[in-house]
Length: 289
Length: 256
Image (tube, rainbow over all chains, first blue to last red; front, side, top):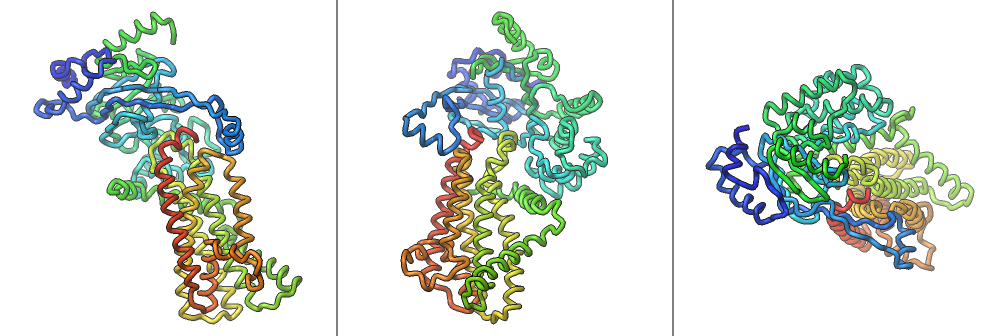
């Protein structure tokens, strides 16, 4: 991508940042504003000092009975836990950003915040364009509904119009390869069938921002190839991607940029090869993964 | 506010789909389908009439209409609030995956119940015709309590949906509360002779709605006290419901 070259000259922190220096990060945010003069792609995801705090109860109290018992015994102890802390970065249109990090580093939390599902406890997030999360495909289906009915339900959930879904209906069914099973209740589907249908619905529109978690294990190898092909064609057209993975090999293959999260902090952000090298060193030293 | 309207426009098709799903799934695999909506209140009416009219011998020709009107309104309130209460939690897994305005869920369950309720009023019309209830202009007044009960149910539903996210045993408590509400709504008895604890019938908004609905059916003017009380109560409850839901909705995902 040509814009990365511009970026490096424009914003020194972009190429390789050891974050933890919020000043540098903020400076980049300001420096970016007069950017339109240069041919930089539009920023589509902007995170500014994003933090996500979870309140963990020692034991999950989710009913009134227990709540009152514990209130009387004064045993309502919580401790706070920051899944993300002071994360600042941005993603420009067409960037494919790999999100690296060990388990519990805050990757999923970050994706959920970008998807709009979680609201950050502090900081600001701006997302421009429609986000399609390809996470746990088919999780949103109603199991008593048939595949066909779920196409409308899930489609409208993703914010598409009914008329639009109607025009794309045949295409979705065809891509999912479900054939006549489309009129069977989803509870009788295999997980692969559900994932195929979910993928077909979610990708019927060219999304502006795509969120991927690990590699898509959609159905059998034949369908996987097909889905990878579809994703690749989207990427060629310049869709912005956030891709979560443990594997640097996958990230190098798919992404052109990467960030590393460690215990909720953004510790590196830059071009994919440099960041992957850092990450490989990091986990090599820690001896984990 | 602008954002809200924009959102509502974007997701109105989802609301439509959710309502359709509620209604469709309710009657799927039942032989009589939507006909149950009509048959069920009719059968209950017959049972209650047999018990209170024939066995206990209260002389009132219009008793079937009386009991049916009360029961229909109550079962909308009860069904609507129960469905709304469960709605957010039931869709919890979805909330964690895709962003959707969260009020869609309680709103859809109440609207679908309201649609079924309005359909079930056909039974009332039929029974009224058979019993020779005289049609009067006052019947148009009936629209007012029908609007008030929608507000009341929506308000209660939003509050219950919110708290049920945090306390999942609320469902059982609300079941008991509904029983109490039912017995204080004068559905199958008349309040005429009751002097002890008569205040109960002054401070029960659902009873106020039922009174005015019956007034409309039986060709009497609306009772102003009950009209203003039920309207005021419902408006306040709806406002509280919206505020509570709005303030807590970002926490839902952490609990469902």
